[in-house]
Image 1 (cartoon, chains in turn orange, blue):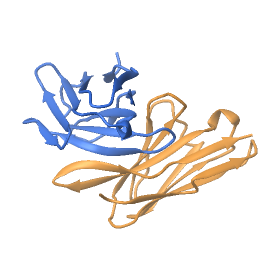
Image 2 (cartoon, helix red, strand yellow; image 1 turned 135 degrees about the horizontal axis):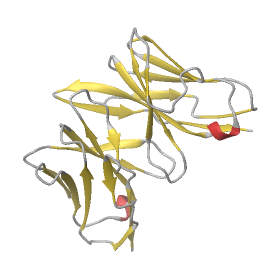
Image 3 (cartoon, chains in turn orange, blue; image 1 turned 30 degrees about the vertical axis):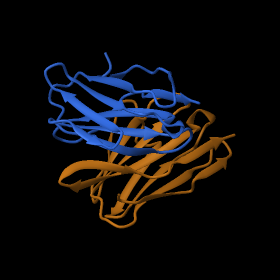
Length: 116
Length: 109
């Protein structure tokens, strides 16, 4: 299947700092990428849909000024958690939408964020 | 009511058993359905798509029942390595995917 990478895989930061997470499609172009957050023993929650060349679409309850998304190219979307707080500690996963007959999506390996 | 509902389990079965999971969806406009597998502290991985006619991949069989708005996953001859959380996904025409909470499967010796 298609390969999606995510960097970093793990980050620990102090409260108040900003953290940038990169999501790359390695062998295909992705006009649409999705950003999810998953707390322990909870389901994946869609945060936003990232569209190449346009503004991201945020789900209800997700602060767009806190979670900045930039999809500047067909292979890269970034999520920046600004002024991170301990409650932002979570597993952040991106996925890329693939059109190959039937639509599906492939996930990056995830980024585990711990805010102290 | 959640858009996609699954029994969280856990389903605890012995090796070699057959186990089935169901997933119900509330959005009748949903067009695409998938099963993903997620191992502990890992990202979800696509297991299989679910077609209207049903589909089979080795020990795994997926079915879609549009009238009752549910999809199912059947695993035959369970292996220890099948232990994981199984997520079902439904999406509409605009492909905004909605994940279920997942069903936990534990296969024991």
